[in-house]
Length: 513
Figure 1 (cartoon, rainbow, N blue to C red):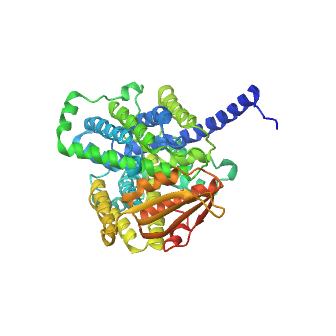
Figure 2: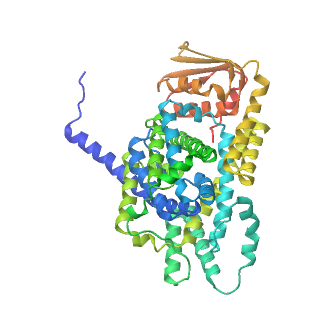
Figure 3: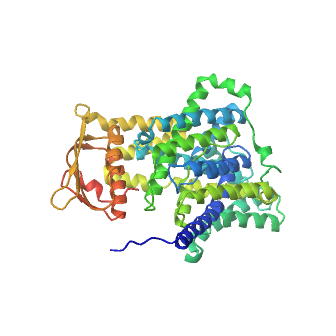
């Protein structure tokens, strides 16, 4: 038998191929991220450059440290609502100290290996939260489409929308021109994503929408508000003052920082899990990812920028564009930095209404009822009620209250099993053509999820694995979703999965959403 040794030339060619794929993917992610970074900043009630700084840090710094190599980090629509509330109640100067504390919490959580516990958050709570955020974003940005600023509360924004439409006149005034730019942006964004040819699938609809809105505003010399970007990116950095830090002794601000850390971590790890389902490369190291996000949010706080999370829109674009390593995420941050540093005048041509149009579409997509339908068909009424209660509470009250309500309702699933909550996990060499067998006995609830995921993720790819759940007395929807994701990922690697007969075997046949 002769061994094959790769020549230096072949190795160099392979590395060159990987780099070229990462380079191409980074440009796609850059084009996707640019309008979102600015739009999310505007939706958060802060200048556009705050979102760009977060995008730069998320790309260059967090991209280099991340535990999920293909995930892309930056400002997220999911935190726009809570940032808006922080700025309204406490002023923009307190955003930095709150983020530094939130980042420190994430950093400590990663160091203490608590990443798996964030995965134990019910999918019903997470998706209900995102749907509620979607409604709040749409309700707020509709007012920007009419040239106004969002109101302080989501219900107020919703109630005031009919009056905005009643204020329209047949003449093309500033309000009508602003709305026209926003509608054109939305139409181009949605239209392109429906009709674009396969060869141009990597060109993002959001970018074309913003370009269309900008060209219409400039070509017809419309009197619409445009975003402001400073001449120097350094001038956009707003280091927190000592007085700001002294205010962090306030218990309400500490609770806010904890909420930011919790929500940012949950959204990041949810995104990382989704990214893992899109490719067959290295799996996410959740504690490392949490640690990297903590570093990133502390840096964002020190710069007075927006909070960051791992973002599924940019991450999925990265995977679909063919990224192979973390270099694509790093380079996308470099491109944002280069544009802001060398050509800020380009960004000053963008109408605020165009970015609002992008955010309306983004928010609308968060509202999707697909996950609620999935929960009802797979797991029954209770998880669907948890989703709905979280959604309603987020819209009617605030983000933190909504999450607390959802997590409180999740505990109801445990009530019938309080006297038998123990779970034993046995792993042994397989028999009858199976390489390894894992047996669960007892109650598989979200409280046991870290143990379950640790066991399953330690199983190597390849061969045949038997999963025996016949002795389970309870399987909640959170565990069922995570185990299903693991099964689907294993099957993609060529591992043969055999599920032994049992009362919950039907929960593992459909892919998780």
